[in-house]
Image 1 (cartoon, rainbow, N blue to C red):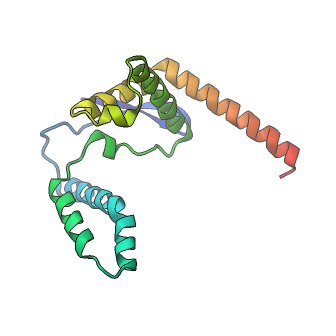
Image 2 (tube, helix red, strand yellow; image 1 turned 135 degrees about the horizontal axis):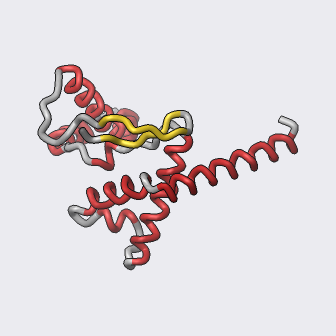
Image 3 (tube, helix red, strand yellow; image 1 turned 180 degrees about the vertical axis):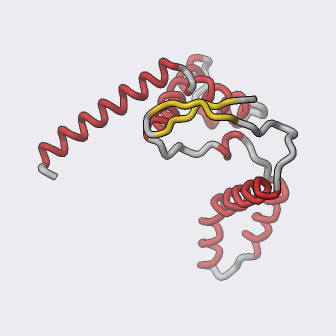
Length: 161
């Protein structure tokens, strides 16, 4: 069975990752995935709908949503939200900086430029996941969090908050 390393309250744990491509899912799993999909569509159009409502004309945005919905597929990028756990979030920040640096070394000016090329999204997501699992990246993230905490305590003490 596949596993995934995750952070819970600052500590790393291995948890199972039972879902694989082609797996049959339960009704509950389908409901959760459909809800996440609908939320993704809604999040991508919320601003446009508000603007259309201000103009009192939902016709164009309704057509855009229908087209987007018909073509929508999950990708690793739209499935990867910023983790709520501070260490996991910091690990991802460090990983993104590292991968961005590696792309810059190859002459790529921006992540957006790299992701615009078909097939690179999966490569980018895989590079982030691999980099985030590196012990060196995890150590760097822990060090950054400790430094942030120290600065926060100093500032808080100085400001008497």
